[in-house]
Image (cartoon, rainbow, N blue to C red; front, side, top):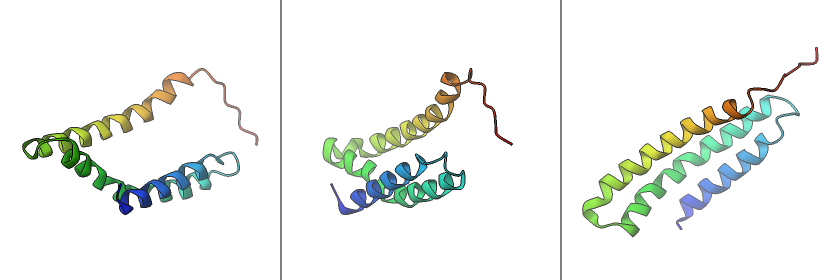
Length: 95
């Protein structure tokens, strides 16, 4: 695994752990998301690395396109799924 992917993983991991403390104050989510955003460009290279290591050169473009599409689908599912599971909770805000 390349150094850039490791850097991306570290930023994403730190950002994810920061977002765990959402109950402290909401701005912590923005800080955590910023760390994840910093790590994302480093991880994008892994799609082409997977294609080049596991597939024939003729298939590299197709595999990279498929993985990119699945990344978008995964993001959409991860935004929709929690709303489907946790829609029955009654949230009361302290004023």
